Image (cartoon, rainbow, N blue to C red; front, top):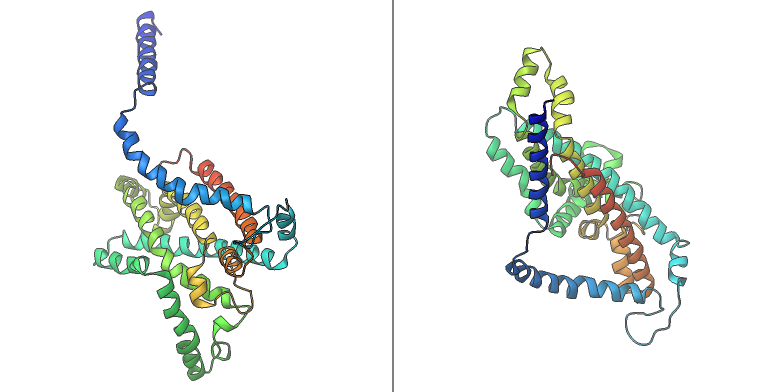
Length: 309
């Protein structure tokens, strides 16, 4: 490299550093703080302060009202030996993992189909998005009727013994019904994200693959999937975090039953609040909050540097 070239490179480097300095040291306009303040105040009053108060009471024997005494880590120690709490965590994480897989497989395949050269793509996209705008509790009550009445009637008419009784009444199969209904509502959200990712893939890549003789399956596995990997990560992490908070669909379908076989963490906490077990379930909610923070950190590390972001 010649001296003049080095000088030009050095000048550009210095300029870039100066520009970076100007960007990082740029004065923030007061109007930004004005727009930020209302949201910050509402978030603090509605979430931060109640959360801190709740964490404090998790170290007491409070029932939500009246007198209370400080008990230290008693509630936390009891939680780790409570079979009902451990069952709710096991169910919630198992349900979340299975539902994430089902939702993303179906959404990805639908997105591939709805971005291909087929007729009525726009109409079909609209139809598939409809479940996303319907309330979860309404969806749950509709499917509750189907699982409790329509399917057993159809099973009896078709002579299928295992379908003659409601899935919701079977402790071993009720979770399957919850996964199906939850996936039915969650697929549209993941579908839209996958469609955005597939549309962003350059068409020239597929033209080159066609010239090389690659089959459609090879293009899907070796071109499409790697190029939308960032969107897959986003859907998996966001979906998993969302399913951990499952509540309304479970309430509408099984109400945590049969017994407590389908009781999620959120449902356990809320049921405990209503039953006067405030401090104990607040400790449970605090542990769940820590788990959510860890998953959020996982999300940040997994999606850092992805082009989809």
